[in-house]
Length: 97
Image 1: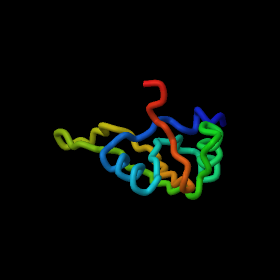
Image 2: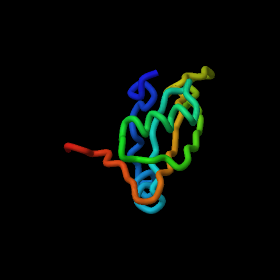
Image 3: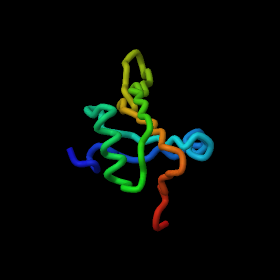
Image 4: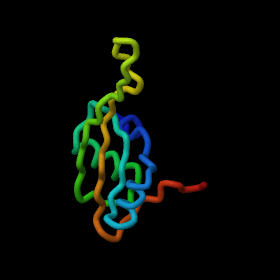
């Protein structure tokens, strides 16, 4: 897989901004078929001056809503990766904005 197929998008929330500023951890939505080693390789290919120290992965469940005794799935599940970088390196998510 190409690294652009592995990394879907960054997660921009208050918690992910706090993790990025204090702990040098960045959160991404990734393809559900990849593993930690492929995520690490994709991050290092996307940003060549970045070295990844650790990758944590979480499978986020689908958001469901109940409507009239039926289960209707509102949002599908996805895989989230929290990437810890080596101290001294950082990712500029809003490059060129």
